[in-house]
Image 1 (cartoon, rainbow, N blue to C red):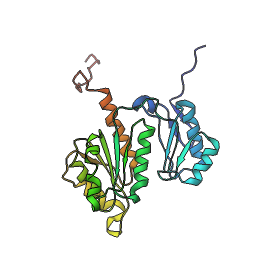
Image 2 (cartoon, helix red, strand yellow):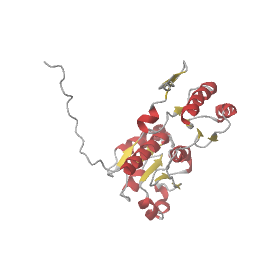
Image 3 (cartoon, helix red, strand yellow):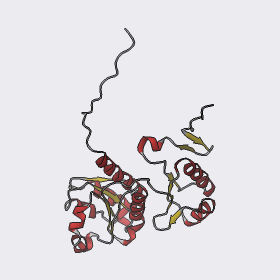
Image 4 (tube, rainbow, N blue to C red):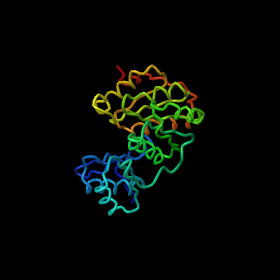
Length: 245
């Protein structure tokens, strides 16, 4: 009797784990931990590890992380990034994605980006506390910035740092606004709008505090670069009419 193919979805009642996602985009489904109970996270992780031998959970506090690790002790938790993970990408991607952080208060978001990149198989050098209030701290690393294939730039307050970095390099820059700042920063809205309004070309912007999303985008850029340019031009042709009318 032929072995039955594995199910594309594990239905846990409270969650439907998408196992086909790895076939579609090369990475298993990532779990957003915020709002989930420890036992729910643990059950999802069990299915991911059984099928994919790796898992990543974002936005997990220490108490829930400890509970999940009692069920799956081979994992690793980082309290700064609030990431909980098992295993890593089977192969490393070529190139690097530098994570540049404006201030120490932005480090949790920056580390979420950097450690997600590492889980995805990307070399992620860090450059921290180089905000525009002391611009010489950034300019001292101008050559290293120019060598990065992609840059993730994390900043709160008025969100000026990504624009400055974009003006210094010839690589894609992914800007991440953070919710760090005083009252008029509006919990990151001011930084977000400043980045969206920037005149520097070559910069894209993700949501407030979304280090994970920036890392995913950077890894996608490096994955496409590794794949190379398609030899055959892409066309979106209309499907052939096979109705016989």
